[in-house]
Figure 1 (cartoon, helix red, strand yellow):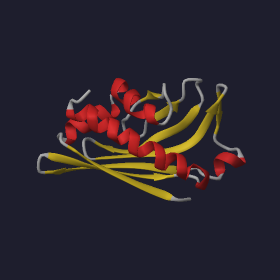
Figure 2 (cartoon, rainbow, N blue to C red; figure 1 turned 90 degrees about the horizontal axis):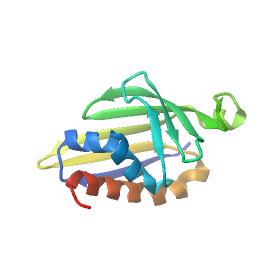
Figure 3 (cartoon, helix red, strand yellow; figure 1 turned 90 degrees about the vertical axis):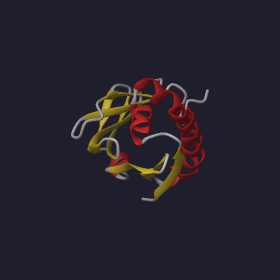
Length: 147
């Protein structure tokens, strides 16, 4: 499974970046680059289950593997949600789960360097390479107070 890497420098403290990255309203804004209406249900606390949902209610079920605000977040993707049914065991899910999405935030002077490593399927690489830069540009705007 390929692991993709993305990074952005943001003129804000790690605390601000962490907050804008994970607070529901700003999360919905920056993740609209992946799917308009994206949201989540759950907690960002270590060990908590979290669901990343599309507007139709389908999505990915994950758990927070590790959370050290405001410097490190590791999400372990474990299954899918489709038509209200959780799937952790199908061949399609077993082909990629568990998959990790890791965020590292590092203060560098007056900026924060945000680095993300994402495990993905070969079929999703093009979509990820299109969506992540757009999402991170929106997150940067949100953190830097630009409209």
